Image 1 (cartoon, each protein chain N blue to C red):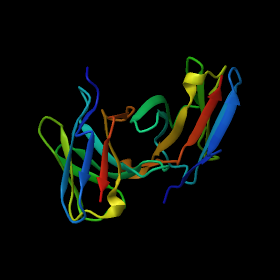
Image 2 (spheres, one colour):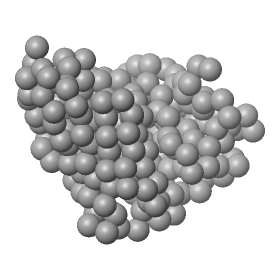
Image 3 (cartoon, one colour):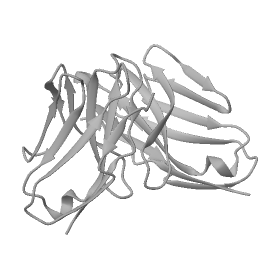
Image 4 (cartoon, rainbow over the protein chains, first blue to last red):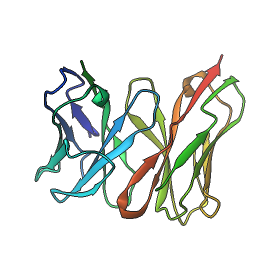
Length: 111
Length: 111
């Protein structure tokens, strides 16, 4: 079992551009959540997907959107990038009420 | 809104010492609490998950307790080792399946 995987590992974008991050959940997991972690801070919940629908959302603007595919993999899209969007983006998956497993993250730098 | 606080923010101890990390949360209506370890620039590794109906969980040298009514959890690490050096994060799963993280405790175990 490969666990939760994310791609790419690192990404550098320019202000105003758009970015797509990808996540494959752990085998057997059907719920995927995305988090933003700024340097020195704890992860902040962006949103959660289950059955291909956004089920819960944190305090993030509509520039942040996502998608879940029938195979449970997920994408996070961020439009009109700002310098403040620079962070480690983490994907987590789980099955029901069980513990979350996190991927290694994607480091996004906006210049 | 749920607020999660971790004290201390940083801790340095000599190898072999037993230590306690603290996590507090403002809303006691939680489903579970999870402790994670994060190495620099990496994703999160799950250490222990405590359901709201449980008082504690143990794994090896780690023991986590939960007092939901007082909004507190502790992570006890016995006989600390240099390999335990990392940032430790706690997260609570609250209403509507939203997850809230503390900012973490950065632990340094000196040989």
